[in-house]
Length: 308
Image (tube, rainbow, N blue to C red; front, side, top):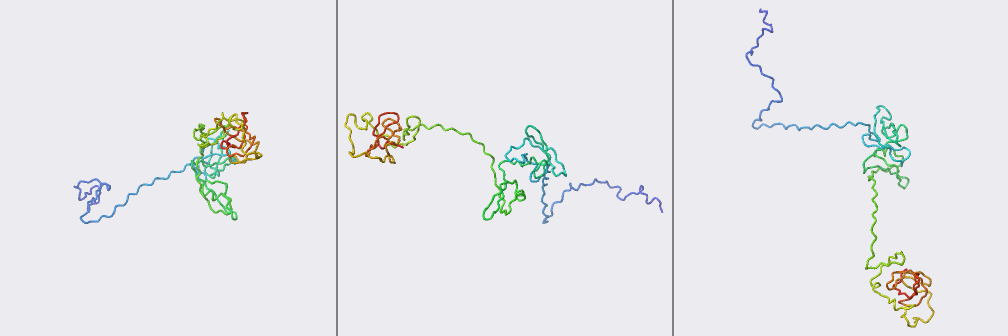
């Protein structure tokens, strides 16, 4: 037996004369075309890579510290929020893990808060600063035959369910609160100029009566220059419509008039003036004798020219 028969250095393979080839990449192999009549299996759909959810930097509870926050006074709900709140660090494993810095009266303060917004000191608390409009939740309960509303507004439905102290709750309802509206500056409207038709009369002085006259009253003229003391033509003898006793009251311009009443009346080119009733008579056209307060002569006024 040849002792060198199993020597690997002297072993010559049968295909020693063949040329070695490089390994072929499986990805680069092109599949052969399908045969005539061959049915290929459906291709698997391409699955797109799902985006990896962002890792929250700060804790989330009733208060999401990854969103804007406000630091407010724990005892005064009407006080203004503190200035420039910012998260300094998060203490893992602590009951009040979020350390927040804020400014108050020109002094920087630091406090620790839990995920409910309560502070370690108890002097301040955290509220969520949500952009307008914001959604808040109210709790309505039953008190006998009446419905009562919880005065507290909750930032979430879970908070409203867990923190309300109502006994017989019938529902939790969302309410959308709009942002505060800016006060618009008051625009002063220019004073309206008096119109020619209808005419707005003005009492002598500065008192505006604001009486709207009809066209018939505007076109009616009173011959002031031809009237005497009691509305009669100058130089003519005085006439009495009724020779009996003068009345104690007459109905003029929508109400009963008596001697001593104060009325407003116009005459000819005069505007409305304040007058005092001095005499009465039964007359369908002129029943009141008026004495103007500007010391002009008394006259019997047309009933249609008298206003209150």
